[in-house]
Length: 314
Ligand code: TD3
Ligand code: ZN
Image (cartoon, rainbow, N blue to C red; front, side):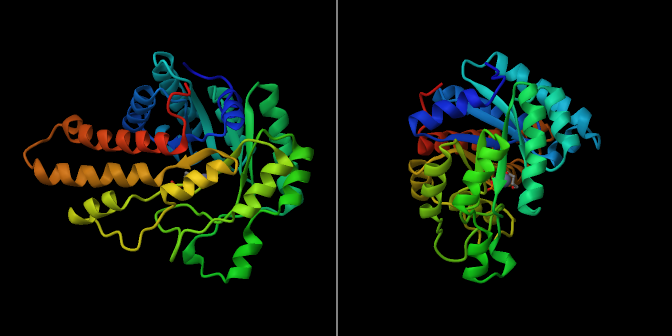
């Protein structure tokens, strides 16, 4: 079933101390694989699209793309026996937020985390007003996600993480529904040089002070088996590293309820597609080539649902 407001899924997860996967899509193939996984695991699921995905789906027109994606998600969700929500990931301006609301999304993220605190608060408050009037919920981010390539020292990196007292103030003033605290992850396949270390003390404080459903960005695990498979079939991905399953489990234990995942699906799909293309040189039907790659996405999603504890919570 299509969930009109993502709050319905995440408030239950907050009360039940489990995490729900939020998986990024750009197309039909990713969507089908994710919903198949959720149905098989009897799990709630959040589908999310970036601004870039909207433009891609609308062939350059993000408003059109938002409608195309939302209609597609709704028609699959309607016939699925599990709750499916649709979320705008990293919305940066009112135009994209409004496009998502008009297309019927279940929630939006306004990411003004790169702006000064006060500006972040003002823009976020404005989005909360618009979204709540439309009956949907809002996610915002505090702190910044810094990748290892940015070459920052430990103290500089610390300064990019969320300030728990600021978080409390921010939540009270804006009225947001979910908060994404920066606690040491980053987007993409190269998250850590050494050990995957997240700032759980900070996370615990943020949870205690806000009590909101919390969101982990940059949460992909970057599974070695798919990185190796991709490299075996011609990819060149070196030094990739993500958030291991035991670290994800700990994050959920301390209050993470929405776990954003894009890279893991990309890597699994591309690795399997490379293999299938190599093994089936006479095949020209894209559907036959995509199917095994879609199966790889489904398996990754099901595995994550087990790790996050959302299995059977539909
Ligand atoms: O917001 N997202 C998805 C888009 C990031 C670009 O890949 C996340 O936080 C998930 O990040 P990742 O790279 O760990 O899947
Ligand atoms: Zn993100």
